[in-house]
Image (cartoon, rainbow, N blue to C red):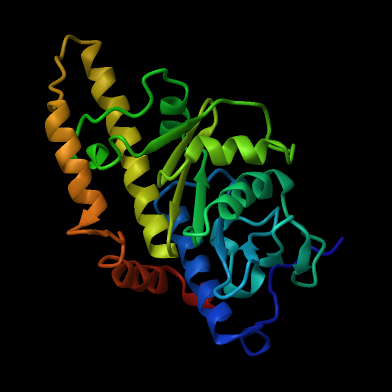
Length: 262
């Protein structure tokens, strides 16, 4: 079996647009690992190759900290592998069912990220879902989809129900499973997932504090609605999140280990 992860750099074998997408996607994997949002070799971040309907997805068996720009498989809209490195690693079909559903239904989405953190899994099992208990969480108020658990996502017919569950929302709670965030580009998807996860973590700590008698202060529905709208819109234009911090995050990824760029 061939499971070497030192793949040949393919920068000169793909378009400049695809290479840029690969580098940013690899950075996102490294940053998700750095911020403690990984689940061993599981989960995925996918990106649509600009100008195509093809997606880039990680190989099943690699840790996020091992991923490089040349290590992604290229797949079509039905999950068929069009290209992958010379390795026995292949893709996880469960990942494609979920990610493919969103990419296929939402042409506005360029990147999808999905996590199984302890906080995300805990909130996904709560009937209340994510609550608007702090400024970070309020940005998602009224902008969250919920999808009931159907078991491991291996059935292609679940894609339609996943698409219906997320609708036009930027994020999705997969009940009894985890969290999912979308973005028009990698920066936006990473930013939304980071804040989604932080919101889940904060909620659990707040709810734990109530066990000792603490009282929760919840902003008014009007305040939550107004604040969520401010996060969602920049004047009359949908706000593109994550752009301001992304260059700084790339610098952090470079300081951690610049090999993701190969």
